[in-house]
Length: 102
Image (cartoon, rainbow, N blue to C red; front, side, top):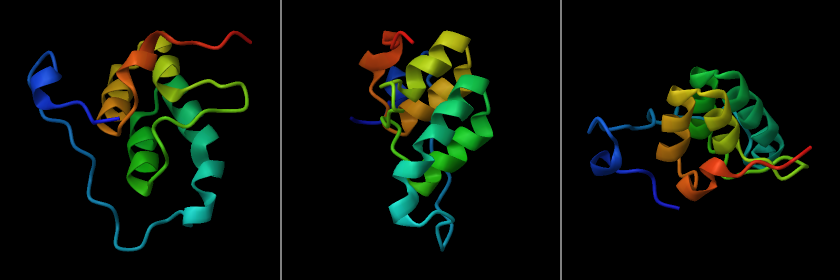
C-alpha cells in the first residue's frame, strides 16, 4: 500500500505527513485501539485528527468491528482533506468505493 504520489494527484500537489514528534503520544500497543478514532475522524471530516492519528502510526487501512475502513467513510461524506491524508498515509485507493452494510 504505497502512498499516493504527487503525479497521481489531480492538482499535482505533494502531500506529506508531518514529522512525528520525538516521543509518540500513543504507546505502540495502543495503535490498534486507536483505529476507531481514525474512522470516526474520517467520517466526521476532522482532517487534523486524521493527520495526527496517522502521524502517530495508526494504520490507514485499519477496520472497525464491522469491517469498515476510514477511506470509504471519508469518501462517502465528501471529506476531501481526510481522503487526501488517508491516501498519503497508505490507505488502499481501491477501497474508496467499498462500504460495509450495517
